[in-house]
Image (cartoon, rainbow, N blue to C red; front, side):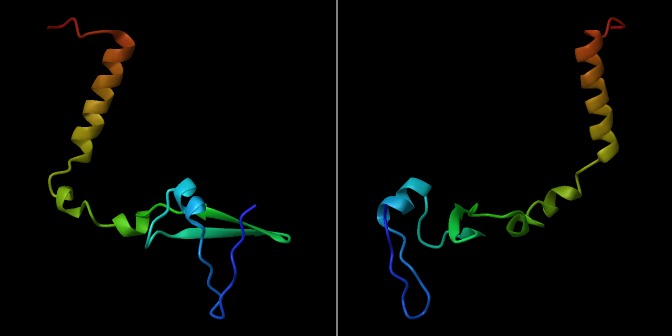
Length: 87
């Protein structure tokens, strides 16, 4: 079992072996899940959905939902019914 000491500011240093095992580096975030007298550390993705929100907005102008639906329906039909025999 590895241990860490809590500083006067309430901070801890994760041992290097724990950081490496969890793939954590400087600036990464972790979540704490407290259950009874125990806590579990869970690595958080470096980029969350909130971080990505709006990052693809520049593609929206070229996005045609109806065209996407049509292509999806055609693809599904081809897979279910086989190739189009109409030519």
